[in-house]
Image: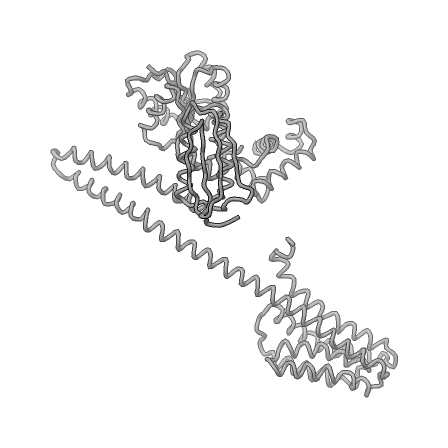
Length: 201
Length: 339
C-alpha cells in the first residue's frame, strides 16, 4: 500500500485528488493539507511514501516544501503538480530532488501511474514540461541577481532589500540593473514579470 | 551606433537639414551689415528680403528632407527667385551669396536637367553679379566657392536625411511583410493541422449527441464515443502546445545548454562537447523532438550517472550524439542556418 500525502490549497481540487486516489486499491491518502508550511510537520507525523504537492500554495510554495522534505524526510518521495506556464520551475524541482513533475491537466491515469513509479524508485517528468523547459532555457540570472529580483518582487524598496540581504543600495541597484538587462526587460516590473513567467524566480 | 539605429535619430535628420539651411542665410545678413562697402541700409535690405524668402526655402528643404512631394513647389521657387534676384542691387555686394539657397531650392524642387541648368547658372552668375556691385575682383572666386559649398552642404544634408527616411520606411515595409508572411504561414499551418483536429472533435461531439438520443441499448457505444472524444481533445491540446512552442524556434546552442543544465540538476554529470567551428542556429522540429525525447528519457532514468552530448559537424549539418553510461544515441540535425 502506497501512503500518500496531498497538499493542495484549492479545496475542490484537493477533494477530487483524494477521491481519485481513494479509488486505487494500492494507495491510501494519509493526509490532506492546504498550506505549504504545514507539509513538513504533517509529513514527519504521518510518514507518507509519496507527497503530492501543488506548486503554488500559501505559506510556502511546493518546491520549497519539497526541499524541506528532501532534507528532513529523504525516504518520502515528492511529486509536484504544476502548470505549463512556468517551465523554469523544472530546473529548480530537479535541484531539490523532486521525483515527479506532472502538469495539472494531465489525464488522471498519468497521476496514479506516476505515484506508483515514484514509489518504486523511478523519476517521472512530464515530456511536455521538459520540452517547455528546453524551450525557455535556463535562467540567465546569477543566484544573487535572482535573490535581489525576488526581494524586489515582494514589493519592498531598494533600501529594505539592501538591509535584508546585507548589501549596499548601490550594489542592489547594480544587481537589479543586470537582471533587467539579462532577462530583456524594459524595467524592473517587466523583468519580474518575465522571470516569474519563466519560473526563474 | 545605437543612436543612429534609433528612430528618433532618423526623425531628427530633417530638422538638422532645415537648421543648416536656415543658418547660412543668417550669416549672409550679418555680412550685409559688416562687409566693406556695405552699410546699415544694405544690411536692412538683406534682413528684410531674407525674412521674405527664407520660409519658402526652408519649406523646400523640409519637404525634400522627409522625401515628401512638395505641393505648389514651382510657384514657391519662382517667388523665391523673384525676391532674391530683385534684391540683388539693393542688399549689398555680398548678396549674390544668397544664390546658394536659391540654387539648392532649384535642385530640390525642379525636375531633372532643368534643376542642374538653373543650379549651374546661379553658381556661375554669383561672381559677376558681385563684381558689378563693387566687390573686389580677388573676392569673387571666394564668393563662388561660398555659393558652391553652401548649396552643396544643404543638398548633402537633405540627401542624407531623405535617404535615411527612405531606408527607415523600407525597413518598416520589410518588417510588415515579414510579419504578414509569418501570420500567413501560421494560419495555413493551424488550418491544416489543428483545424482538421478540431473539425474531427466537432464531428465526434455531434455523433455523441446523436447517440444520446438513441435507445438505452446503445449506451456502450456512447461511452466509447465520449472517451474517444476526450482522448482526441487531449491529443489536440498537446499538439496545439507543441505547435505554439515550435513557432518560437530557440537556438540549438541554447537548447543544448539547457539540456545539460537540466541533466546536471537531476544528478547526471553532463558534459557538452561542441565543435569550434560552431553549430547551426536553428534546429528542425524532428531532431528537436528527438533531442527532447532523449533528455526526457535520461531525466526519467534513475540509474544514469554520466552523460556526454557531442556535436560533430558533417557536410549536411551537425550530428548530435547523446551518450549516457556507454549507451549512445545519434541525432542528425540538418543545416537550416549557419552560425
